[in-house]
Length: 142
Ligand code: RB5
Image (cartoon, rainbow, N blue to C red):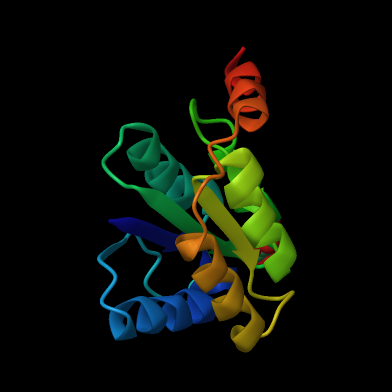
């Protein structure tokens, strides 16, 4: 199950991502927000991050205006490796090298076409499982 959340700045892109997930029969849970009324992004980002951390969700996708706020929030939750990606190369690399479990995107930064390619790459790229990457990920939690 993929958790998806946004603030008002990410609402339109979240809807496009949900359409993509539905078209591809990918199970998801929508954590809001559900309109473009202004809200506080930490509330939404934290809910998804906590559910990923507690293994209720396999991965999360967070959208705000820049993708920055939601990534900062998510990365404060134990076990979260949130990757702020606006290109396909980074989305692939962060799965292979960092085993990133949350993708953060900014609706005001990238177009829908690129955003959906980033989402697709993030969801379909497995972790490399290489020893050096496993060791480095273990070192993140300290
Ligand atoms: C909202 O205006 C904006 O600050 C928010 O969506 C996000 O970009 C914060 O990092």
